[in-house]
Length: 83
Image (cartoon, rainbow, N blue to C red; front, side, top):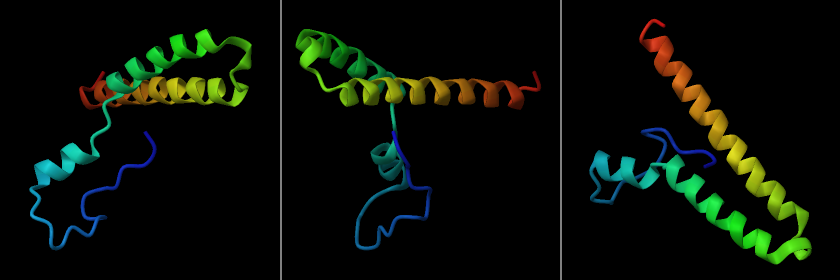
């Protein structure tokens, strides 16, 4: 999550990388993020009231960012199909 550089924004001179390797290195898998955040939720609950509120708020913010991205992507796909 965060910002992913667009093609051409990274100076890859001197590196023997294919465009596919760069794409894979910069890929963000939202399903993996969601699974990780779900896993952290159980751990956070085990800590209970001693957990700093900021950590839970960050987890909630990340989940919201995933949902917003998925929503945007689904509507862009629908728009591209003419629906």
